Amino acid sequence: MSYILALDQGTTSSRAILFTRDGTIAGVAQREYTQIFPKPGWVEHDPLEIWSSQMAVATEVLGRAQVTPREVAAVGITNQRETAIIWDRATGQPIHNAIVWQDRRTADICERLRADGHETMVRERSGLVIDAYFSGSKIRWLLDHVPDARARAARGELAFGTVDSWLVWQLTGGRVHITDVSNASRTMLFNINTMQWDEQLLRMLDIPDSLLPEVRDSSEVYGHVSTTLGLGDVPIAGIAGDQQAALFGQLCTAPGMSKNTYGTGCFLLQNTGTAPALSESNLVSTVAWRISGRTEYALEGSVFIGGAVVQWLRDGLKIIDSAPAIEALAASVPDSGGVYFVPAFTGLGAPYWDPHARGTIAGLTRGTTTAHIARAALESIAFQVADILDAIHDDSGIALRELRVDGGAAANNLLLQFQADLLGVPVVRPVVTETTALGAAYLAGLAVGFWSSTDGLASQWQVDRRFEPQMSRDQAEALINRWGEAVDLAMGWARETDA
Ligand code: ADP
Image (spheres, rainbow, N blue to C red):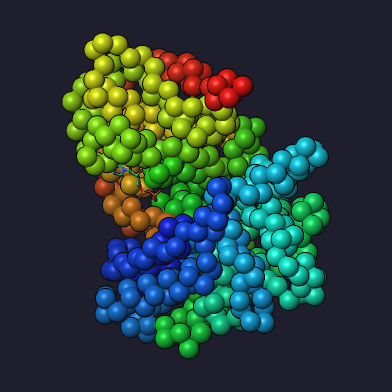
């Protein structure tokens, strides 16, 4: 058997990727599926379409690569996190569309929980801040709004799952109802210290435990694909939420090792070892994975507008034709000419947490050109990542030795060089940047002996390019301080105009 099949169920598309034993990609299939926006701030997916698109790409990638199911050693799953689905155990029918992680309909439930003083308890038990982003309040909403749901849940007729659970249920013909620890840690119902569903959190949200999946390791055989699906009876052997899977795919398997994904937003995770590090800076503590019963944790921070600032230059300002074109424009000037661009289009996340901040371009002069603005826009991505790493450093106390990177904007060499300069540590881009799917494949392959150990995988992880810091620390610190002043200008803006 020569392949691992990774199912990467993302927010806008379902993908299936075949990996060979040396960790290279043998085939990819991808299908976008419907985004449903019933009201402003609401985002739903049809669970049956999630499933059918995922199944379709799995079949397609095997067909295109001319690989038979007998050649597949295991299936690994990685998924959009926090998205909540409830279905009928007897019929397998969802009782409602999936409520997607981006959906804000439960903001008022969370507001009330905060007003009732639950914040510290939630943080200590789940590692999370109280927010509509996580699954808990979404489950509560479904139970409160779908007719009969509460009564049916009380009778044990319903099952809840994040997307991983839903896919495993479908893949096993309804025989297996499980999730892995990394996904469980995003529900706001899971105690990351005891590694159990937490009675107090369940009570706070009035959610019956009869709904919940069994919580398993991130790398073990959970069951086999039902033969009726035509994918053979391949073992399903690895699961992790997308960001944790990317951390594993980057082989950040020792404390302090960190990865950043430069996508639309940025997701930064640092492995903090075998004990949860609670954050003082409103970062999230999360379970990275559990392998052979051994749990590793991570601190996580996200930047709302990362690569999206480049999209804005393309589609809003129209000063570039394509996202990659920003690099040549920005490189046409030696620096930003004193321009600082804070892309707080939707407020600022960690470590500032200001929903009223708005985008600001400071330091404009008669000499400012589109090139300076492009350069300042790229630099803003790196400044925001540096801010999060600084907060992570305060919380974990671990010094960063290098930053591993992936995501669409990690193709930008100027950005990564500036990132290394700001951080004062090397920034490393691997050859395989499909780290999310790779992480799921690694977890599955380890469970079935396709790969023998994490250490062995580390030796096959290959560097595409390593960006060494070139700037003096004095200069980097001066830039970071000035950035901080620009952030101060951006903060609170919407509040003042709204008043
Ligand atoms: P997501 O998974 O969030 O959709 P991707 O990882 O595909 O995002 O990355 C897409 C983002 O990267 C877009 O916001 C785009 O503007 C940005 N991007 C793509 N290529 C480049 C580049 N060469 N330089 C800077 N940004 C880029």
